[in-house]
Amino acid sequence: MNQSKENSLKNFLILPSVLVLLCFLFVFFYGVYLSFTDLKLGKPTVNFSGFKNYIYLWKNPLFWKSTKLTIYFTLVSVVTQAFIGVLLAKLFSTKVFCAKIFRPIILLPLVLPPMSVALMWTTMMNPERGVLNYFLSLIGIEPFMWISQYSTAMLSVIFIDVWTYTPFFTLIIYAGLLGVNQEIKEAAQEAGAGAWITFWKIELPFMMPYVLIAAVFRIIESFNQFDIFIGTTGGGPAKATTVYSIYGYIQSFQNLNFGRGTAILFVNWWLVLIGALITIKLYQMARKRVS
Amino acid sequence: MKFNFNLTNFFLNLLVLFAAIIIIFPIFWIFLMSLKSSAQVMEWPPVFIFEPTLDNYKVLFDMSVAGSSNYGTIRINFFEPILNSVIISGGAVIVSLIIGIPAGYILARSSFKFKEDIGFFILGFRFAPLILVIIPMFYLFTILGIKDTYFGMIWVYQVITLPMIIWLTRVYVEDIPIELEEAAFVEGASVLLVISKIILPLLRPGLVGASLLVFLIAWHNFALGLLLASKKAPVTVALLKLLNPGINFYPVMACGLVISMIVPILLIFLGQKHFVKGLTFGAVK
Image 1 (cartoon, rainbow over the protein chains, first blue to last red):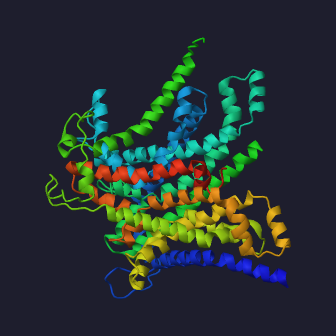
Image 2 (spheres, chains in turn cyan, purple):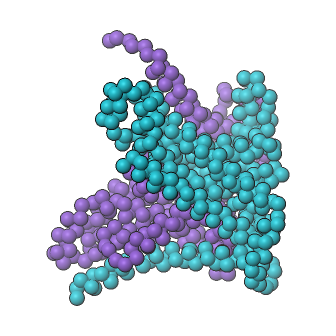
Image 3 (cartoon, chains in turn blue, brown):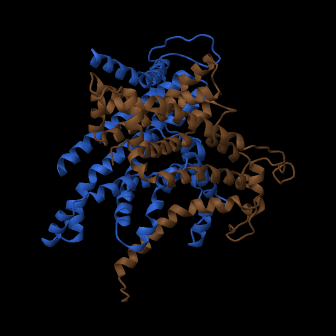
């Protein structure tokens, strides 16, 4: 009797949180529903329109361009971050003097608001007065247009994203490196394996699960990246950086076409899901290999 | 003492130093910029050594110099967005702690039907497509009349803060040995008593760290404030507005950036240990 009363009280304790989160789930599904309507702000009636928004997108070249940009941005930034992240983790786990004193600053870019980071780089990437062009001029390189030019805008934003989020990989991989079995490593070295072989055959497989778990988080957030684009290019110049989140935002809040906006973002959500699931599968495979 | 010059070590030190400079320089540069006059920002090549001024900070906080400065009629009061950010992020964390700690405890300790499903559902919010949620939210906020209110903002920030608090509580509770609680339950203590008298004191260091981290993540947020608030907009939204006047206004914006960055840097000094754990929902300890 007392036991079951205890249990119902326990269930009651989880209820407020679940209710709050269910509200958001409802809002999410409401957003999905909106993508099947012709909701426009200022238009008096809302009608169910089936797949009309999706068909419109399917036939729209800008949608396909945006698809490419979104996938390109995510893949290039996450892969670059993973690569540099491994190098930095290795570098900072060496016992050299500088590595010890500078270790705490690795996480610095990560704690700054992404919007602040974006604006910070916007001032430094200014084509006329930016300090980056000054550094380039010191080594004899012509002024660079960075985020202000079609051909370089996306790469510049990726550069900012890499600066900001590489530490995320580094931190997690660093934690992983601490767990690499020293005995196996020493045994391998005694057996005559060189530093490179030890790295490729022992350390890297051990690191891989950590790299991939970090990648899952980064893939999700890169697909949804909004702040850094708004703080630098706002989707321009000439739609060079109009990824899904920006495209959906513009459709919704500039063209006031909420139906189309939500449709774009719902497609984006599926991409997020697919990207995350593939990476989680890879993670599980990598983990099986080391255990 | 023998001086041992090792070429590899020298190179490694150099590489680490190089990486450290790339991380630190932009932040240092923005700090310098916040101390420059608007004429100095326009100079080419950029100046590294100059006489610092605090005027930009005065303009940022509208201490009646806006009219007399070179910035003309632009008037900003940055106190407001800072206050908004503190109230919204702080309020959101407190609300999340109140409803999230018991939920996290239950998820860690009791077993019931659908427990793992509920846990997965909560974790799934880490993957929530924020903008997709904001669009209907925008519509609902207008209907409910809670747009641009602290109430509405704190409520909508739960989508970020609550899942993190619940999940981190769960991870921390699982680290606590269960024997103490079992003894208390045998003595006839209720769940609420066990949480408040046994769990909370043991959780405190972890929870303080987690709260700092979650506050920081809330402080980062930009999209929710951009679309659901105007007078109650957070710092990140106010910063974007400072970009519009152009290059000669950069020093004032730099001041805003410095302030928006100092807060998280201070917080992280207090709660560094919990950072990695929190960012990955305890996937990496």
